[in-house]
Image 1 (cartoon, rainbow over the protein chains, first blue to last red):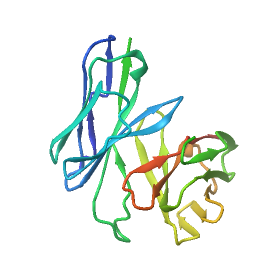
Image 2 (cartoon, chains in turn green, orange):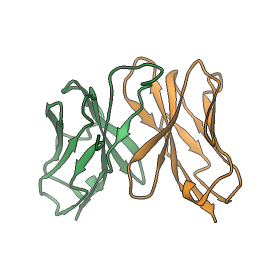
Image 3 (cartoon, rainbow over the protein chains, first blue to last red):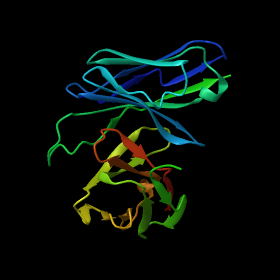
Image 4 (cartoon, each protein chain N blue to C red):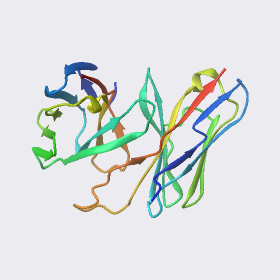
Length: 118
Length: 111
C-alpha cells in the first residue's frame, strides 16, 4: 500500500483565499483524522471520521474550517477565508477500526501539507 | 495544558549513548504510544504499551509505563545519528478513539 497520501505538500496563499487540503487514507482503514501542527500549539486534533461520518469536530477552530469525507478513499479539509494564523502543517492520519494484539490501533500519518498564509 | 507533556524538550547526546525521554499525562488511558517525526516528515509509530503493561521492548527501544504516576519513558539504547528526530508520546483516553499528542522531545545524536 502507498500509505496515506496528502496533497498539496506545500501551499502558499494570500489572506482571504480559499484553501483545500486533500487526503487519501490507507485502503481498508475505518478511521480518518485531521491534525494541525504548529510550533506554539504542537499537534492538535481538528476532526475525525469513522466510516466517512464525522464523529468529533470539537477541535475545528472556527466556522472558517470545514471537513468532508464523501467516500472511504477521500477527505478534504477546507479553510475559507484563510488567515495568517492558519499557517501550519496539516496532517491526515488513518487507522483500522479493528483492534487486536496484531492490530493495536496505531495511526498512520501522511507527509503533511505545509500551509503558509501571507 | 496538553494531555501529554514530554521532557526534556530537547536532548543532545553522542552516538552510542542512551537517550531517555519522559512523558506525563493527566487522565486515565487505554494505551500510550510513541511516535517519531523526522524533520519535514509525517509521524511514524514506534511502539505501543497498554495500560495493563509495565514495560515493553522493541529492538533498541524500551518503554515503561507507570499508571499510578501517569508517566511513561522511552529509552533508545546505543543511539545512532539516524535516531535524530522529534519523539512524541500519544495517549488514547479510555473510551475515546482519538490520540492526544504531547509537545515532543527533539533528540539530536552527534556522530
